[in-house]
Amino acid sequence: MAPFVSKPKRLAPQPCWNHERPERHQEQDEREAEHEEHVRLDDASEAALEIVRGGEFSDSEAVRMALREAAARRRLRSAIRDEVRMLATDKGDREEMRLVREQLAELAPPPAD
Image (cartoon, rainbow, N blue to C red; front, side):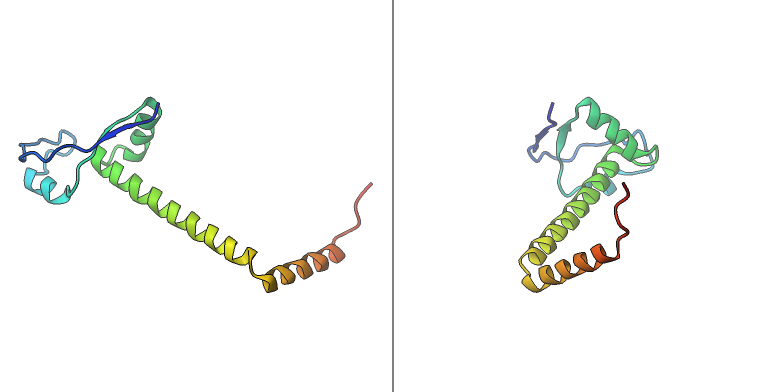
């Protein structure tokens, strides 16, 4: 089951109490939260959130951290895909790779029977 995500309407700030970190104040939470999302998690997502929390982060901190890490991984994969596409169209690089493969084949030991 896919997670359900909704964007809530902006309401007046309500007093909040973070049971995991009671030392935090409402004003601090409001400054940190520029944007709110409400998410309904399936069992696998709930288990993943617990792993990310690691007993030291609140749910909100863990979600923010997981989103930043996921975005960084996607940016890296996208950069790698772009580089692969660029190299695939580079005729000089493809010719050099062919020569390297030929040289490596000459250095390889004969196949065992």
